[in-house]
Image (tube, rainbow, N blue to C red; front, side, top):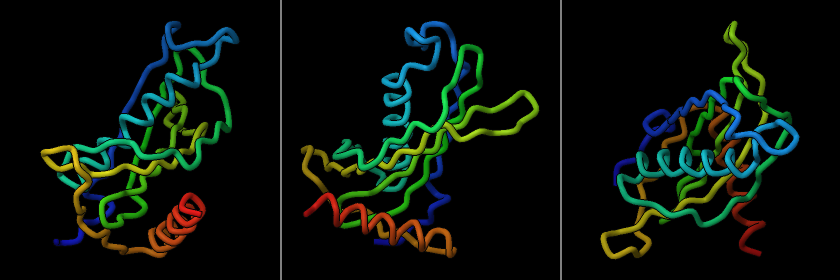
Length: 150
């Protein structure tokens, strides 16, 4: 199977936050953000594997700052690791100011599994590591995988 580059599956989603997305403290409802993160991760994994996928785990989901009504929210997803049937996806969520400046509000790591036509896990292309940053992310992904599998 031919390796694929990180850039081949990079995905962005943009949301303008409305009142329906807010919790009782007038901040973005965490469950809504988690749903959007799962969608972005699935698209990244589908683009990498050319298969339907399912979420196997969420290793990390860190809320760093709030988002409010009328904020522009940008979710950026990229693959950090590809195993035999699974892929780790990082989704970073930002509030984008009107001047284009971005503030990181959430980082999440999800493991997605590729599925064949029968819903059975199937092999995925290897990940082509091209930069030092990608190598470091790949090694960190292996550490997270090893912790999950203990």
